[in-house]
Amino acid sequence: MKKLSICLTVAFLVIFNLVGNCQKVNLDGDLEFLKSENKIALEYKYDKMGVGKFKNGDEYMAKKTSEYNEKEAGKGDKWALSWVADRSERYEPKFEELLNQNCKLINFDQNNKSNYTMIVETTFTEPGYNIGVMSKVASINLKITFVDKAGKKLAIMTIEKVPGRDAMGFDYDTGVRIEEAYAKAGKSVGKFIDKKIN
Picture 1 (cartoon, rainbow, N blue to C red):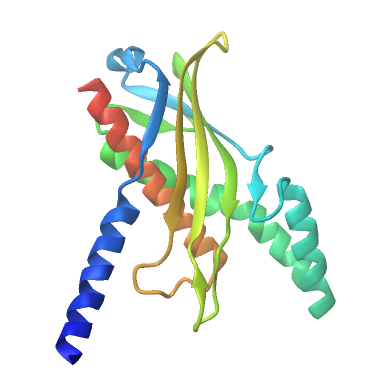
Picture 2: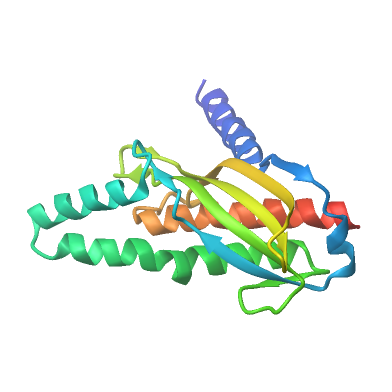
């Protein structure tokens, strides 16, 4: 009975990981224009991002800041700075790293001068939580728009409910969970683009 229980647990974890690593990318438009490019400019947007139960990310940030400041003076203000700083310090670099690893023919970078720009807009973030005995996986939804120099939209990709968690369960920090979601998104988007242009 104990062996059966262990086998079922292992089987569940394998299936869970396989499902978690397969993210569906939807495409509206054509990526044919990318075939002649070796570098693409990147831009990130968070201004229309919902967070958890909040439709507006600013409302979420204000509530969390207030809650933390009530517990300990200044803690909420530090949290708010970290919440925003994690975007450029953790999420964007991780997304770019995995995107470039999985789409080797094109270099995607915020500093690139290019005929086209890839705008990565986070439309939703579920921060999740991990309090040891209970946890909830983080997740993100992205809308990715390709535009030319004139600002004309050429293609739109969407990817939803991209999970973020540490494989070993040591994701007590919100930033770690969300960073993993951006890593998975970068990998999925990179593979998708690579397949479309090859």
